[in-house]
Image (cartoon, rainbow, N blue to C red; front, side, top):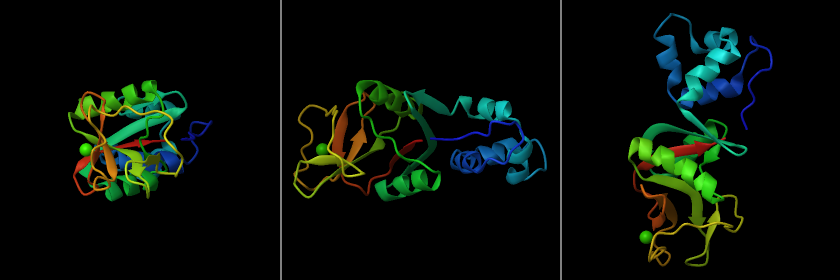
Length: 173
Ligand SMILES: [Ca+2]
């Protein structure tokens, strides 16, 4: 979870990393000469929320965001972790719909935080826990151990896919 400062003026390290992830720092800085660290120190909580509002979706306890970039699975996961989150992982229909809305916004398939385990056809969350919700496309997963990552199609259904494809990065926080 992100933690914004309760006061309006405090330094906000998680905000900084998220702003950098979203490439918002340069957009905000365009209006002035202040560097990002100064901006996050002096910008009010409300200004940050306004800047992030169109880039972030809330679903339950989670916040979802994309940087709009298409990279392989390992790079997508790394950029989410560097921003203080992990890859978006739908654990119920509501979360799946929220992730789908970002997939549709960018019109790009996205990697999910799900990988195939040692046993072929057995997919798990990237923290190793078994899946408690799935939304496989018809006849998927069909990789038989050769497609260890999972992508979301633009209809919200899932496909097992090789991990070296370039897919949209969507993170959860
Ligand atoms: Ca497949």
